Image (cartoon, rainbow, N blue to C red; front, top):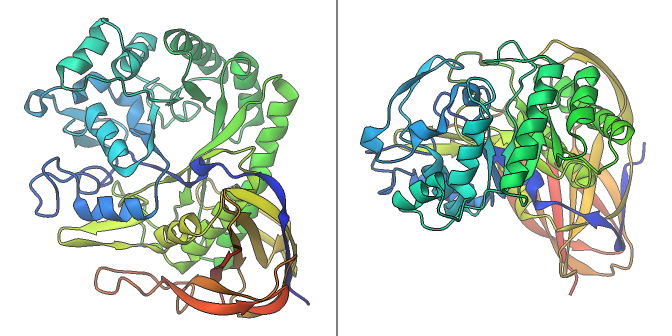
Length: 480
């Protein structure tokens, strides 16, 4: 079988949304406390922000950060987390059965987003909360008049509005695990009221209503809100001990997203888009800390998802890996340091070596069929036409750099033919993410077992490129 990739840098297909590289932080396990935020730690600054975590996050240029949940939000009252920290009440979190100190709240979250350069994305409490509480939160964040909550924000030392753009209307309210869970009819009615009145207060915001795998649920929500909302969410978790089952679910995700898009087109007259605001591998750890020992296998899955999202970002312009630190975390912290998981390394590679415009790319590859089970909900799946290699080519906004990202799912190295229209002889830089085997993982003692290496290579209009086994490779070429 011949494996090849053919790129035409002159044929630009679409803009790639920067928000597909987003992340998610929930008050779950050690994601916030002991992750982002750790008071009295020698590794933290005067605000309580872990400096080593900040440095790692800045390296992957997180464009949008979702908070505070997740399941946590359905029992979270935002006013508990503002004002002097020593006066904030501790509460019992019903979702994860742990005590919430409320020392990291709205103002800390916004400051964190400003520090890392991320757009804040706030998810609302539709479990034990109500529309009044949601409107007050919006007023606290975005109000610029002399109303009570806008003045309260100023009184707490934040004179300028936060201008929070993205607002999630609850989280997974279809599930019985969710505090205050609802039927589709109940959620549809409530969600419409939230979107309608929040946009009366601030027409500039963009709202995300809840979607899921249930087509009937999605249709009812879209019929009720499709004329006024901007997005519908979708969550995707996968996981299997089998390497090929895990990486193949990149294409199960693709099928699911296309299915949601078809429903949108069937029901809505407006161009409602999809937010993939939770996605990750979750298969080994089920305690309340959820600290997955991610391996190269999981990092290759993440590379596949990021490449998929580059090609689908006109349909799915926002995505959030669940989660950023410790709990299902791309970053793992310990008292005396941190290490970066293979999932983090996927972001490090793709975010830092991709352009803003997608260009025409054609791939010839051997394909395989697979039958398996998604771990998270035990849903059987059957996929055909799953490629052994996949990829996308992007170009910088100014047209001066070309990036070709190729993921090799095979557990053996491959030699592929590359053709780049109009290229000619140049020297490119090759960045390769891989490890000794698909179960390799990083630890604090051995942080670079799975890592990115780089080297210079000669390129031409046509040339051959070796792809390492179970790897993701990005070729970066200066065009001018």
